[in-house]
Structure formats: C-alpha cells, structure tokens
Length: 383
Picture 1 (cartoon, rainbow, N blue to C red):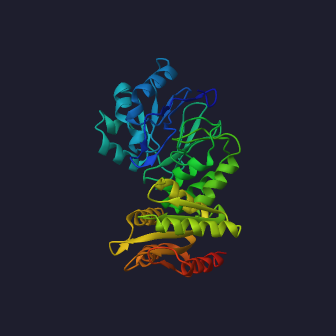
Picture 2 (cartoon, rainbow, N blue to C red):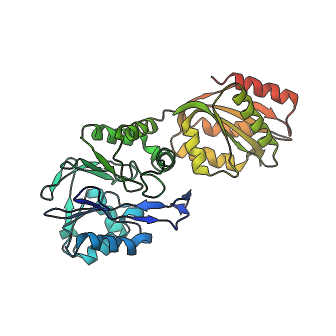
Picture 3 (spheres, rainbow, N blue to C red):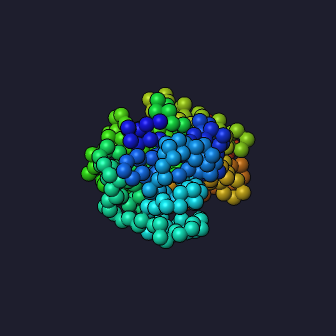
C-alpha cells in the first residue's frame, strides 16, 4: 500500500488479538504500522509486534525487492513496535539503527545485537538525516507515552511519523470511524501525559503537515485540523460535551435501580446522560466516557467497610490517567453501615480541579420516597 509514490506501508493487522496490552478489548483488532521510505538511501520506519513477524518480514522484502535497507528508524521501543528490531538487524547486518540516547538504552535491555555500538546513529532534537530527496527531521516526544519516544517529520512530502500519537484501536480502514476508538486509545494509554502531548502539539504546529502516519490505525490525510483539535482537547483535559456519566457498581441490583432512576431524572431535565455498569461494561470505555462529559455521578454499594471493588477499580483507573477538571456527585448504598461515598470521595480528593456536587445521596438497602427526593436535589444541582 502506497502512502505516496516513495513512502510505502509495510505494517500488519492483528485480527486475532482480543486484549491489547492484556487489558483493552479490541473487537476489530489492531494494526502495528511500519513504513518504508524509498530513496537513494532507504529507511524502514519502525518494526512491529512479534505477533506479526512473518507477515511483516514478507511485506518488507516485497517493498525492498532485494535491496538492503540503509536505516531502521526506531520511534518507540515498546514491544508492539520494537518487537523485531533484532531480527531485522540480523537480516541486514550493514543497516544502521537510528534513535536517540534513551532509545539505545532500551534496545540494549531488550536485545543483544551484533556490532550494536558501531551501527548506532544517535539523533537529538532537530537533527536531520538525508536519504537523498527525502529529509528526516527528528523531534523528541518524551512520555508520549514512553520516555524515549520521538517523532519524525519528512519535509519533502510533508509527512509526520507520529509514533503512538494519533493512533487508534481497530484496523487500517480509513473509513472506519476514528473519534471513539482513538479517544479510547488515547485516554487509556497516553492520557496521563497531557502536558507532554501539549508540548508535542506545539512542535507539530510549526510544521507543514499533509499526512500523519501513526504506529496504530489508519494514515490520516483528510481534515487534519479535526484530529489535531481532538488531541488538543483530550490532552488539555477539557470535556467534549456538557453532560453526565452515571457510573454504577451494584451487588444485588438495588444500587443499579437507583442509578438508572437517577439517569432517567436527568434525561427528563434535558441533560445528556450515559449510564454504565462497572461490573459488566468495558473499563476502558467507562474511562473514556468519564473524560467525555463534564460531570460524573458515582453510584456504588458499600462493601467490606469500603466501596464495592469495581467502583474502586474505576476510580483508580481515573486517577492513573490524571482525571481532572470535572464535577463529581455521589450515590451510596449500604444496609448496616453505608460508607461507600466516604471511600469514593477520599479517592476523588486526589484528583485535580474537582468540584463535588451536593447532596450525597444515601440509600439504606432499597430506594424509598425520601431517597428519590434527595436524588431530585442532586439532579437539580447539576449545572
């Protein structure tokens, strides 16, 4: 597949994987993207996960047509992209390896490569590598989302090789909707590092970009301002819409009943609302939806003197992704000692720029008229 006449796609689609990084459901699989730039000198842009080794090597050999590559550029050493660095180096012993100082520290931790020190081409911020007509300029992108990450700009054809930035779950199909799966990918994998993504976006703003080639998902060529605006919003932690996520964790169904009743109250008031069951719905989707709206209502049962564990897990996921700039309200349930709200709030107090909405609604076993009255008050206080 040609990106341009001289930039060729050589990646693979993994349609057999069920959990990416052993935690994220990928019903449409995921791609491991690799590209080849053909010029006086030839550069391979990243390798792929070992799950795709056989097909990737076949793709590379078909593109090269017997030619030995001059360079392997390593944008990111995480195993889903660096899984075949040694194999490629063994196949092409004259090939140079391009990376930054941190890249090479990580390569040495993963692999023992013959003649490694003599094959390294170490680059730093703004360095340029000429392939002939094509000129590669390197920009460091530390913590997007590993410390060694760098992106590469090819200025002749105005292509940004963006590493994990602008990636998406799913296959290479450019017609498949991008926003939801890209948001789920970004917010769960890169989301903690908003400050670092903002720094990368500032660098990208100075470049004339006509195509973005990420390491997962499709090449982006149309409506680039849309994708950049999404990344700017996600990395600045601004909600995409005014609305409410009602996230609930119910043991016997009584808390669920209350949560759904509360969601209906909000809908009747014209509020945009989504309810998610943390005991059954996908955790990564719940995290993504929490960032999507400006308000989250947490409804959970008391459990073992704390909060029901699916809710605790959800809150810790949010904390690890730097959840902030939101409003949070609580609905708790308990028969002899309801303390779920106290436990949830203790965790949420660790989030930044959070406003808590009153009142805290306490259910003792099952909903009653008095409970519904308190829920009405809470709904009225959601602005």
